[in-house]
Amino acid sequence: MRLSTMLIAGSALVMLSGVAQAQSASRAPPTSSPVTGTPSTSSQSGRPASTPSTANGTSPASKPATLERVDQYFIQKAEAGGAAEVEAAKLAQQKSSNTQVKDFAQSMIDDHSKANDQLKDIASKKGVATEPDMTMADQEKQELNGLSGRAFDRKYADMQVKDHEDSVKLFQDEAKSGGDSDLKQFASSTLPTLEHHMQMAKQLQAEASGTASIAHTRHHKSSGKSQE
Image (cartoon, rainbow, N blue to C red; front, side, top):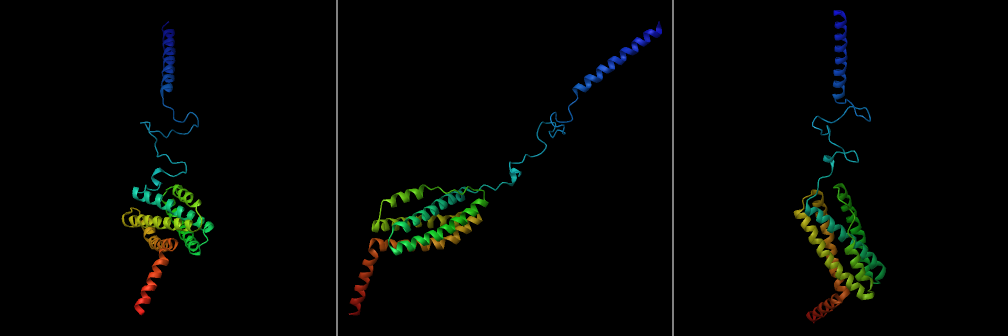
């Protein structure tokens, strides 16, 4: 009788031990991902154990530094102005019959296309979008399209003087107060060309408006009187 009681008690202990082990196993945290079976990378706090990478495989810290506002403004205005110069010059090549105007326009295409490409390369390295705003170019083309002959030449020359005065000021400001060394160097090295363009534009303006020939005639008469 005592032996039977002891056997029954032992069986009960075995059953209780099995239930306890099953309950303990059900509460234990999983050691692998339920989908892939790979170890979990989350820490106990629930935060990722490593910094996530961007779509191209680089970490956020490797992105180009944000340019200062003055440099961003310079890029936007210089790109828009350069694009306008080239587009207006192409139109002058088509519509003007004046050799001086056409020669000036070709210089604008050559010089500003080169400067535009240089600025695009610098901006691209800084992580800045390089699509110029064509509003200024479209506006100038619209004003010039309805003109022909001397009227076209005068309007084009007037535009060039105003545009280059603005460009010289813009590049002077960047060369002096810009925050990015590459952009400051670009502005400084491009300034002499823009200043030369401005002088050429003023001479073209004088020729197109007729004031250059008047000034030349007055100078010629004055020289003749002094010789007498």
